[in-house]
Every structure is written in structure tokens, then in C-alpha cells.
Amino acid sequence: MKNIKPFRLVAGLGVALGLGLLASAPAQAQATLDAVKKRGKVLCGVSPVAAGFSFADDKGVRRGFDQDVCRAVSAAVFGDPDKVESVPLSTNVRFQGLQSGEVDLLSRQTTWTFSRDNSLGLDFGPIVFYDGQGIMVPAKLNVKSAGELGSAVVCVLPGTTTQQNLEDYFRPRNIKYEAVVFENSDEWRNAYFTGRCDAITTDRSDLASVRAVAPNPKDHVILPETISKEPLAPVVRQNDANWRDIVTWSFFAMVAAEELKITRANVDTFLTSKDPEVQRLLGVSGDLGKMLGLDAKWAYNVIKGVGNYAEMFDRNVGPDTPIGLTRGPNKLWTEGGLLYSPPFR
Image (cartoon, rainbow, N blue to C red; front, side):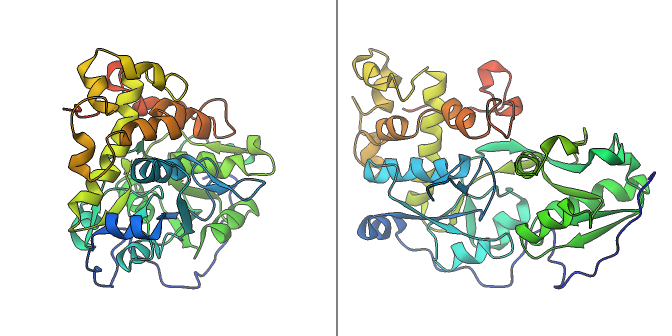
């Protein structure tokens, strides 16, 4: 790699496995819906700081894409999207927080992998964001592709898939590099911004979040390579099918609403629709809510309180936000994307 002098660091803690395996035993799942109703709010595990996905605004209110996934569940359960208490969890303790019962739901840019699904005593919900790992570098280095990163020092976080992905990408290409692990996202970002690392790697959506909070976002370039598949999904404890169904179908209600062209603003006009699926979705006919242990208008409440998928995407991470993401694979299947809701029948 040209014009790069690697800065050698020693990580303060041992490197966590890239597969994110945890030593603690899975907590025994309980009737989460009953506990949530009794408590009067959903406890949602989120990122401490991730612009566009989970962050506190200037009034201290949590906002973001992942936050809206939690708000959708709250709307389905309570008819109110704001009965959510957000619990910030760092990458290396997020699964323990869910296993121990500290949170009811993890909505935190978490990749669904085989190992996580089968070793942690947890279940993944639907894929809410199709992503892939990327690499960001300072523009001043004039690096155009990942293939030019020989001898680079790369910042990574523990308890994520990024380290293994980096090794899987670089090793077959005989690219030598040094991965340096930082304990939390603040240290990780600061190390990169202060030049202690030549590059930073994580999901491309998260790189856009990091760049958005840089002193000068134009000083940083996300390289063109996508080096992995990162299907991001909410996570719940195993052995509570009802709670997993509520999380799953709250999300699908937003996807279906976009396809049916139902929005927060016009959802009331659809209450008189003659379309049978619209009637079932909005609780005008059928007993879908009863099957979940919820009110008949649970999906109506999700759409009225949070909106459809396009509304959630655009206001949090879309082209007109500082994150500036396009839909890409997160378009509806009818528009060439991967988003698809099972039918409401």
C-alpha cells in the first residue's frame, strides 16, 4: 500500500471471536408478551451511538432505523409506538443482555449467522436491512480499492463478524494487514479519526453512520468492495414463538403497507378499502390480531405510529439524510429488491 506507515497498537483485551460466540448459557425463555404488558413497555437493546440507526437527538429522545423497529413492536402491543425503553448495549455484551433478560428484544444492526442462530439460545426475526461489510479510508491516502491495503492497520470491534470477514477476504488475496481490536465503538471511531488506524471496517451502513459524524465527512471514502453478506435482523430469546411472531409480523406489516401504498398519512382512508388483504392487515376483517394475542388493529397501529418501510428507511438513513443511503437490495421485490412480506391471510 502506497504512502501508509502502519501504526502498531496492542489491543487492551483479548480478541473476541469473529463469529460472536459467547460463553454464557442461554437464559430460559419466558412468556415475553405477558411480561411486557405487565411492565407497560418494551425493553429494547440498541447501539449506544449509531447515526441513523440509534442515537439520542438534541432533546435526548432516541431515534433511528433500529429504534423504529422497536417502536413498531410497541405500537403492535400497546397501540402506542413510544412505550419503549432503550437499553444501549455494546457489541461484545449485546447477546448476554438479551440472554439474561435485561432486554426483550435486540434491534442493533446484528448480522444473522449460522453460529449465532444455533449456539446462543436466541432466535432471529426477519431481515430488516440487507447489508454487506465495507472498508473506509481517509481520502488523503488516495486508496481506490481494498486491494491497495497491503500492510495497513485496520480498526475492528470485538464480538462482530467483521474480523473473520476481513481475514476471509484478504487471505486468499495474499494481502498482509494488521487488525486492531477496540473495546467499544467510541474508542474504535476515535482511533480511526485520529489516524491511529489506516482503515476502518464494518457494515457499509455503519460506515455511512461513522462518516456522517466525522468533522468533515468528505475527508473519508468508503471503498467500492462489499466483502461479505450482512443480513441484519432483530433478535429474541428462543422458545417464545409468540413473541418472535409479534416482532416478525410487526416488521412485515410495514413492508406490506409499502407494497399496498399505505402510509402514516393515508392509512385511515384504507379502512374502507374493499381489498380483502388490506381489510385483514388493518383489522377490519378476520382475526389476525387474536392469533398473536393482540388487538385486531395491531398492524394499523404499527403503520399509523411508525409508517411503512419506505417511510422508516427514508427518514432515518435515506438519500436526504446525513447518512445518504439508497435503497439498493432493500427495495421491494416488485422494484428489483429483496424485501417481501408473506401474505396476511
